[in-house]
Image (cartoon, rainbow, N blue to C red; front, side, top):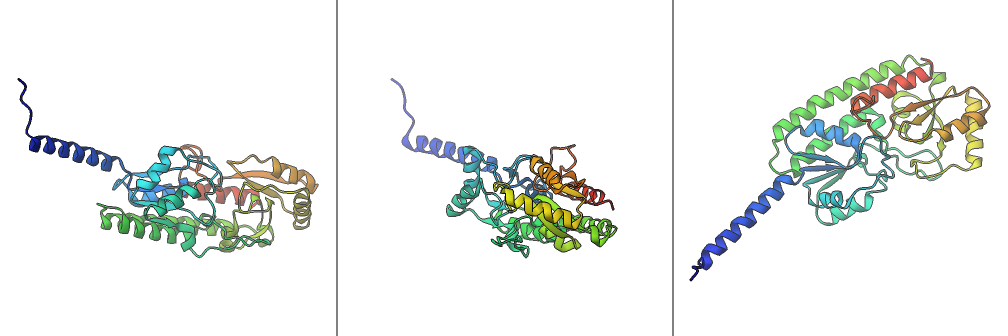
Length: 303
């Protein structure tokens, strides 16, 4: 005859198994989930190895259109903090972020807290591309650090604040380098034409004039009309623009069509505008991306 364990023992075993499973799940849960890889790099510099940081957007992807898996969507709803750009940038995952917030997950839309600009044009939509101004990124560093300390369990607040302060100084150093490099560009040459409206913050900070964009919108999901291209080609001719800058993650066909329509010798120069590159690709971190774009713009404008 088999002996059976007392009910109390069985209950204890069940409870221990449940606690073990919950503990394993807690260890696997990321402390912070970040939507874009630019913000992902910034957040990792601040958090360090304190807790895991999961970045949804892969290198070279388009922040306007990238999507996520069901597993990543579940991750959003289980994390301690969601860091996202906001202002309509992450169009492909906005619904997932909203669902996580509705489930009670703390989230911070960084672009909304760094004195956002509006995109030039009839719609005057908020411009999400704040990272082209490093001084605003310095503000974002402080914001993210505050949110991490406030919402992530088990974090070493002093260590996070120290890393944030150190990284903030690195961002401001790059900002100073950028200002010095752009000062060498004559004011009459500080004119930008890009694939879509992405450099409004840079233009304000460093005294550039945005002549226009091939796609007259703040999103790559829009398309230019024939009249849009014709109007921009006229503006390029009048301003004697020498270079059109195209996002490295997007085909530059439209920019080349514009160069042909303008009827002048216009180069098309790639920039890392909305996504970091793979390691070794020239823009694997925010600081590397900023330096690369600064040199590409200055060289493209013959400075």
